[in-house]
Length: 314
Image (cartoon, rainbow, N blue to C red; front, top):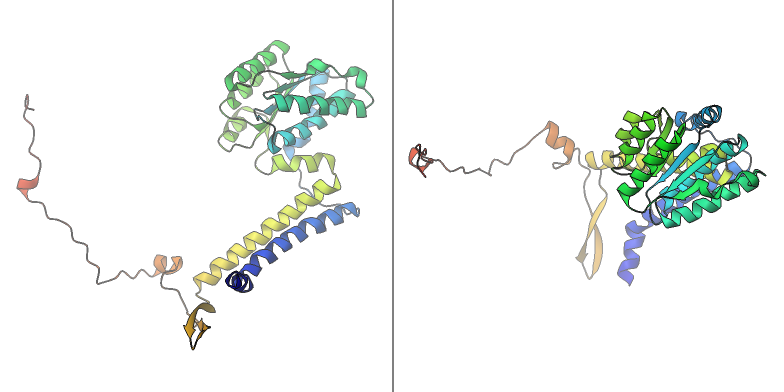
């Protein structure tokens, strides 16, 4: 038990200190946001187009289609998409524009139905809420894709939002919506599907923009503070990584190990080195192959070579 305590006193304290620093960044920025500090979040073009897309659908008198991916059971990706779609629904409710919320999982359908209903309730427009606007299509991947694509074609949707967890069905959705001339705003947590959305959609949220959307749209202090705090954490971790690379490359060493002498463990000090012989930079710019290591390659004679096969031979 004492050995574990010695280990934490030696190096384990750094991991605990790092976690405390990162948590402090999050709490400090949440405190700043709650105190009325206007924390900066850069402009995200894809989110600025939400109102434009809903406005165009209202002018044309056509519905807005929203698809929160194929997550089942519900997870953080689906919840993030539902939060974004609740903002879209709020705009559509004010304009009395119909919506079609397509779900591919039973748990996603249940949660989405309650959240969309609450949005209409908060806006004081519960009479405009249609229970059929939130639909469970299918929990099978391509059956879900076919169902949503058919719905887009039949209803001639004017705006389509695809955000969440998508796989091979992503291009089916995007091309179908493109064929009816709908404005498309998309985002996928799968990096293999993002290029397809970029090729076929009008606006795409890439990477962390999808997770920053809730804070950007709602400006809730906890969400904004958490987002800015996470950026601080990323900067801190990148700084530690760069410093660690430089430190190890330059060969700056202190206590490296311990030796048992005179009945107790004593630290062994390593001298300061200019360059570490096995560092990456040393191997790149000053290669030093071991002269004692010789590579033995067998010498093949003409008799060892394979004989050509004649026509008709086996």
